[in-house]
Amino acid sequence: MKRFRHLALGMCLFFLLGTLNAQQLSLFTQYRENATIINPAAMESDFLAFGQNMTLGANYRSQWNGISGNPRTQAVRFSFMGDGSGASLLAGGYLMNDQTGPTGFTGVYARVGAVISGDPEYSGIAVALSGGMVQYRVNSDEFNLRDPNDVLGMNSQTEIFPDVGAGIYFYQMLSGAMDGDMFYAGVSVPQVAGIDLTFKNDDGEFAVQRIQHFYGMVGLYHFFRNDGFLEPSLWVKYVDGAPINADLNLRYQTPNALWIGTGISSAGNFHFEAGFNLGENVGLYNNIKIGYGYDYSFSSFGPTVGDTHELQISYSFDR
Image: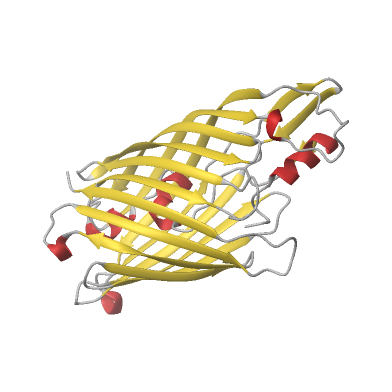
């Protein structure tokens, strides 16, 4: 989404102006499958929908295809929730790599927290922290300057900083007219520390300022008697200096393996997703989920950007 990610052009302006403030965290079309990256206290969709408390997953995203230096993101994640009443352990972690033109970052994180609940299978309030180390990098060899006589005046550089995130998450199995449905909501600040990444060139210093990101997520699993379900969800993102952005999505899991979804964002993006969910519906005890997401930008503001493709796979089971 063009208001929430910077291109290589943005980095060139950054060198000219000294400081650039922009979205610094990766985006996801299938964000419900990556909820634990967005919010360290979040429950995996495999737990909310199928009651499975351990998940391994991987995600690959190629954004704005057709534009040179387009963002590409890879992530691998693991999550676990312990059994028991009172307070259950919430743990996991993820590894993420993101490259946009000559700039990129690689981070490794662990997450730990607790689910406060009398029976975590039906409801709970989770609080958690994530922490890790992130390497930011700038490859000067990939900058193409309009004037061949211009000199960037720097070598390729890297900076390594610690990173901390925090979140709170609530989920509740409903009763009455919506008996058996599962409601969830959470808020998070996945990048708490505001740190200036300072590099040096021949003319002095320039910096990229890491700024806080504020996320909110809410959704509902409406289960049908045929074992299918419908999931409306909303992901709201706010970064200082940019307008509030909201993604509204609807996903339907058929009684068989297929699931499909669609959505729209206030930034002018259309979302489509589809995949296969192979678990009890095909006679398996564990669950294998394979999904594909597609974004198309129709906004009339700013430059035209290419479409986006995203693949994800996960394996979950009940310990």
